[in-house]
Image 1 (cartoon, rainbow, N blue to C red):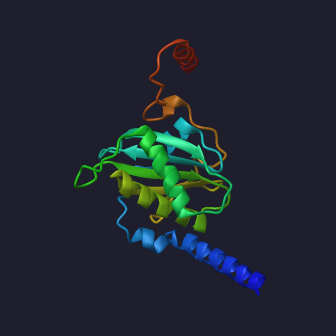
Image 2: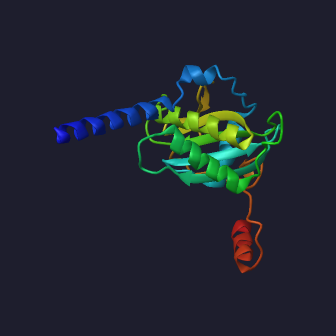
Image 3: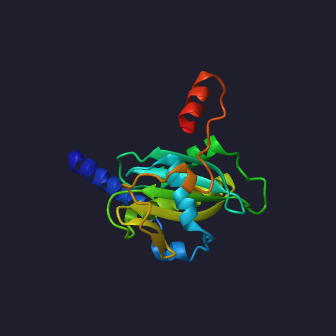
Length: 206
Protein backbone atom coordinates (compact mmCIF):
# COMPACT_ATOMS: atom_id res chain seq x y z
CA UNK A 1 0.00 0.00 0.00
CA UNK A 2 2.80 2.36 0.89
CA UNK A 3 4.55 1.69 -2.42
CA UNK A 4 1.40 2.33 -4.37
CA UNK A 5 0.80 5.63 -2.57
CA UNK A 6 4.37 6.83 -3.21
CA UNK A 7 4.11 5.92 -6.87
CA UNK A 8 0.85 7.84 -7.20
CA UNK A 9 2.36 10.92 -5.53
CA UNK A 10 5.37 10.84 -7.83
CA UNK A 11 3.13 10.63 -10.87
CA UNK A 12 1.03 13.52 -9.57
CA UNK A 13 4.10 15.68 -8.97
CA UNK A 14 5.44 14.83 -12.41
CA UNK A 15 2.12 15.77 -14.00
CA UNK A 16 1.98 19.05 -12.05
CA UNK A 17 5.54 19.97 -13.07
CA UNK A 18 4.77 19.15 -16.69
CA UNK A 19 1.58 21.25 -16.61
CA UNK A 20 3.46 24.19 -15.06
CA UNK A 21 6.13 23.96 -17.75
CA UNK A 22 3.52 23.97 -20.50
CA UNK A 23 1.85 27.03 -18.96
CA UNK A 24 5.13 28.97 -19.14
CA UNK A 25 4.92 29.54 -22.88
CA UNK A 26 3.13 31.96 -25.18
CA UNK A 27 1.13 30.98 -28.24
CA UNK A 28 1.64 33.05 -31.42
CA UNK A 29 -1.80 34.68 -31.00
CA UNK A 30 -0.95 35.72 -27.41
CA UNK A 31 2.38 37.14 -28.55
CA UNK A 32 0.79 39.08 -31.42
CA UNK A 33 -1.82 40.52 -29.04
CA UNK A 34 0.79 41.62 -26.49
CA UNK A 35 1.62 44.85 -28.33
CA UNK A 36 5.27 43.97 -29.02
CA UNK A 37 6.88 46.99 -30.75
CA UNK A 38 7.75 46.39 -34.40
CA UNK A 39 11.33 46.69 -35.57
CA UNK A 40 11.77 49.38 -38.21
CA UNK A 41 14.54 47.46 -39.94
CA UNK A 42 14.60 43.84 -38.74
CA UNK A 43 17.06 42.70 -41.42
CA UNK A 44 19.62 45.23 -40.19
CA UNK A 45 19.20 44.05 -36.59
CA UNK A 46 19.47 40.37 -37.57
CA UNK A 47 22.51 40.92 -39.79
CA UNK A 48 24.27 42.99 -37.13
CA UNK A 49 23.76 40.35 -34.43
CA UNK A 50 24.77 37.59 -36.84
CA UNK A 51 28.04 39.34 -37.61
CA UNK A 52 28.82 39.96 -33.95
CA UNK A 53 27.95 36.59 -32.49
CA UNK A 54 28.17 34.11 -35.41
CA UNK A 55 25.40 31.89 -33.97
CA UNK A 56 25.03 28.20 -34.61
CA UNK A 57 22.00 26.06 -33.75
CA UNK A 58 21.07 26.22 -30.04
CA UNK A 59 22.58 29.71 -29.70
CA UNK A 60 20.46 32.47 -28.15
CA UNK A 61 21.36 36.15 -28.57
CA UNK A 62 19.71 38.78 -26.38
CA UNK A 63 20.25 42.39 -27.42
CA UNK A 64 19.22 45.75 -25.96
CA UNK A 65 18.32 48.57 -28.35
CA UNK A 66 17.87 52.28 -27.71
CA UNK A 67 14.78 54.16 -29.00
CA UNK A 68 16.52 54.64 -32.37
CA UNK A 69 17.25 50.90 -32.61
CA UNK A 70 20.96 51.39 -32.04
CA UNK A 71 22.55 48.43 -30.32
CA UNK A 72 23.53 49.21 -26.73
CA UNK A 73 24.56 45.75 -25.55
CA UNK A 74 24.23 42.11 -26.51
CA UNK A 75 25.19 38.69 -25.24
CA UNK A 76 25.00 35.16 -26.61
CA UNK A 77 24.89 31.78 -24.92
CA UNK A 78 24.17 28.16 -25.77
CA UNK A 79 20.89 26.62 -24.73
CA UNK A 80 21.29 23.65 -22.40
CA UNK A 81 19.99 20.27 -23.53
CA UNK A 82 16.96 20.17 -21.24
CA UNK A 83 13.19 20.35 -21.80
CA UNK A 84 12.01 23.78 -22.94
CA UNK A 85 10.86 25.75 -19.91
CA UNK A 86 10.01 29.45 -19.94
CA UNK A 87 11.11 29.89 -16.33
CA UNK A 88 14.58 28.50 -17.04
CA UNK A 89 14.85 30.57 -20.21
CA UNK A 90 13.78 33.67 -18.23
CA UNK A 91 16.52 33.10 -15.69
CA UNK A 92 19.16 32.57 -18.39
CA UNK A 93 18.15 35.75 -20.23
CA UNK A 94 18.00 37.77 -17.04
CA UNK A 95 21.47 36.60 -16.06
CA UNK A 96 22.87 37.75 -19.42
CA UNK A 97 21.09 41.11 -19.25
CA UNK A 98 22.47 41.77 -15.78
CA UNK A 99 25.97 41.08 -17.08
CA UNK A 100 25.86 43.51 -19.99
CA UNK A 101 23.60 46.44 -19.02
CA UNK A 102 22.17 48.10 -15.86
CA UNK A 103 18.45 47.70 -15.19
CA UNK A 104 15.88 50.42 -15.84
CA UNK A 105 13.57 49.58 -12.94
CA UNK A 106 13.58 53.18 -11.65
CA UNK A 107 11.90 54.45 -14.82
CA UNK A 108 8.12 54.68 -14.91
CA UNK A 109 8.08 53.77 -18.58
CA UNK A 110 10.70 51.53 -20.23
CA UNK A 111 12.84 53.30 -22.82
CA UNK A 112 15.18 50.54 -23.96
CA UNK A 113 14.00 47.41 -25.73
CA UNK A 114 15.31 43.86 -25.53
CA UNK A 115 15.06 41.56 -28.53
CA UNK A 116 15.91 37.89 -28.75
CA UNK A 117 17.34 35.99 -31.70
CA UNK A 118 17.37 32.21 -31.35
CA UNK A 119 19.22 30.00 -33.82
CA UNK A 120 17.78 26.49 -34.03
CA UNK A 121 17.29 23.46 -36.22
CA UNK A 122 13.99 22.76 -37.95
CA UNK A 123 11.83 25.02 -40.08
CA UNK A 124 10.41 28.45 -39.39
CA UNK A 125 7.09 27.26 -37.94
CA UNK A 126 6.35 28.08 -34.30
CA UNK A 127 7.26 25.42 -31.76
CA UNK A 128 6.63 25.06 -28.03
CA UNK A 129 10.31 25.88 -27.53
CA UNK A 130 9.70 29.23 -29.25
CA UNK A 131 6.72 29.77 -26.96
CA UNK A 132 8.92 29.17 -23.92
CA UNK A 133 11.52 31.66 -25.19
CA UNK A 134 8.75 34.23 -25.73
CA UNK A 135 7.50 33.76 -22.18
CA UNK A 136 11.05 33.97 -20.85
CA UNK A 137 11.87 37.13 -22.81
CA UNK A 138 8.70 38.91 -21.69
CA UNK A 139 9.29 38.05 -18.04
CA UNK A 140 13.02 38.90 -18.13
CA UNK A 141 12.23 42.31 -19.62
CA UNK A 142 9.71 43.05 -16.88
CA UNK A 143 12.23 42.13 -14.19
CA UNK A 144 14.98 44.26 -15.79
CA UNK A 145 12.85 47.31 -16.56
CA UNK A 146 12.97 46.91 -20.36
CA UNK A 147 10.37 46.84 -23.09
CA UNK A 148 9.81 43.39 -24.51
CA UNK A 149 10.82 43.46 -28.16
CA UNK A 150 10.84 41.07 -31.08
CA UNK A 151 11.50 37.34 -30.92
CA UNK A 152 13.40 36.23 -34.02
CA UNK A 153 14.21 32.69 -35.12
CA UNK A 154 17.14 31.75 -37.31
CA UNK A 155 16.70 28.39 -39.06
CA UNK A 156 17.92 26.75 -42.27
CA UNK A 157 15.01 28.55 -44.00
CA UNK A 158 16.38 31.96 -42.96
CA UNK A 159 15.23 34.42 -40.30
CA UNK A 160 11.73 35.26 -39.19
CA UNK A 161 10.22 37.72 -36.74
CA UNK A 162 7.55 35.60 -35.08
CA UNK A 163 4.13 37.18 -34.78
CA UNK A 164 4.87 39.66 -37.58
CA UNK A 165 5.27 37.53 -40.67
CA UNK A 166 8.45 39.35 -41.70
CA UNK A 167 11.59 37.46 -42.58
CA UNK A 168 14.27 36.71 -45.16
CA UNK A 169 16.48 33.93 -46.47
CA UNK A 170 19.80 35.43 -45.40
CA UNK A 171 21.35 35.08 -42.96
CA UNK A 172 20.26 31.58 -41.98
CA UNK A 173 21.28 29.04 -39.34
CA UNK A 174 24.29 27.74 -41.27
CA UNK A 175 25.42 30.79 -43.23
CA UNK A 176 28.77 32.49 -42.75
CA UNK A 177 28.55 36.07 -41.40
CA UNK A 178 28.84 38.94 -43.86
CA UNK A 179 32.07 40.92 -44.07
CA UNK A 180 32.32 43.65 -41.44
CA UNK A 181 32.20 46.31 -44.14
CA UNK A 182 28.69 45.21 -45.12
CA UNK A 183 27.32 45.75 -41.64
CA UNK A 184 25.96 49.07 -40.42
CA UNK A 185 28.37 49.07 -37.50
CA UNK A 186 31.48 46.94 -36.86
CA UNK A 187 31.55 44.30 -34.12
CA UNK A 188 32.23 45.73 -30.66
CA UNK A 189 35.82 45.23 -29.55
CA UNK A 190 36.66 44.41 -25.93
CA UNK A 191 37.50 47.49 -23.83
CA UNK A 192 40.33 45.86 -21.96
CA UNK A 193 43.93 46.96 -22.39
CA UNK A 194 47.16 45.03 -22.61
CA UNK A 195 48.74 42.60 -25.05
CA UNK A 196 45.56 40.57 -25.61
CA UNK A 197 43.73 43.65 -26.88
CA UNK A 198 46.68 44.50 -29.11
CA UNK A 199 46.56 41.04 -30.69
CA UNK A 200 42.82 41.36 -31.29
CA UNK A 201 43.23 44.82 -32.84
CA UNK A 202 45.86 43.46 -35.22
CA UNK A 203 43.64 40.52 -36.13
CA UNK A 204 40.69 42.83 -36.80
CA UNK A 205 42.84 45.06 -39.02
CA UNK A 206 43.78 42.18 -41.33
